[in-house]
Image (cartoon, rainbow, N blue to C red; front, side, top):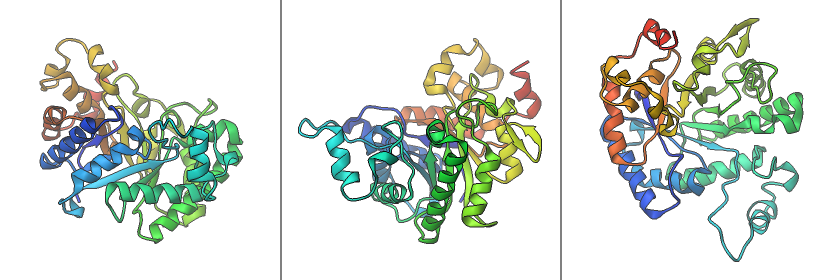
Length: 329
C-alpha cells in the first residue's frame, strides 16, 4: 500500500464516549481523504483510542490502511472505587503470571516477552485486526537508568526475540521503537538510545533478515534534533537520527509534528503564506513531512475539522533541503 506522508495520531483527548465517536469520525474522514497511516498505543486514553480506531476500520479493506500501536506502559483502566490500582495489577497481570511486580519499572513500564504478548493480543482485539503492520516498544529508554546500559540492551534483545516470534505467528509485520528522548539526546546523556546497538540486538534476535524496520521520535520546528543534531554514531561517523535511519534502511514516523498545537502560537506572522500554505498547522506539518528520511509525520487529529485542514498539505510538494535549512538560518 501507499504510505501517506501524514499519519493520524490518537494520543490526546478525554476518556469519553464523545471523544471516541469524534476519533472514529476523524479516522474515517482521514482515510477518505487519502490518509493511510494510523498510530495509537495501548495506554492512549486508557485503551479507548485503539477501540475508536477499531470502530473506524469496520468495513474498510485491510489492504488500504497501515496501523501502528505500542506496548510498554501499563494501560490502567478508568478508576474503579471498589478496586485500587495495586489490586487491579495483581488480578489482571500478577496472579495469571503475565507480569511480576519486580519486572515493573518506575511503577508504570514493562517490556518482558510475556507482557508484550499479552498486550499485543489485547491491542489486536481492540483494533479488530488479525495482524498489525507495526508494533513498537513504547519509550523503552524509560528502563535505561534502572537496568544499566548492558542490562538494558540485553532486555531489548529479549523483547526483539519476542517480536520476531509475533512476526512468525502472523500477528505483526514489523516492529520498532517509539521514543521521546532516546534518539534526540546526545551520546553520554541520560536516556540516550544507540541505534547501532538496537540494530545489533535485532540481528541477534532475528538474524540478517530481522523485522526491526521502524523508529518513531518527535520532530517539529521547536524540537528539530532529529533533523539537525548528530546524536547517533554509525560506523564511526556521527550523524543525525534521520540520517542514521536512512543509512540503516529504517522507516521513520515522527510524533508531535505540531507539538500538540503549542508550536502554532510561536510561528511568525506570514510564515504559512511564505510556504504557500493557508494555516500555521499546515506550515508546521510541511516542515516535518519534508525532512529527508521522514516516512510519515504523525499528527493528532481527534476531529474531522482537524483532518480537513491538515490533509491539504499532502497535495503540496515537499520543501527542498535548502528551504528546510534556511528555516534555521
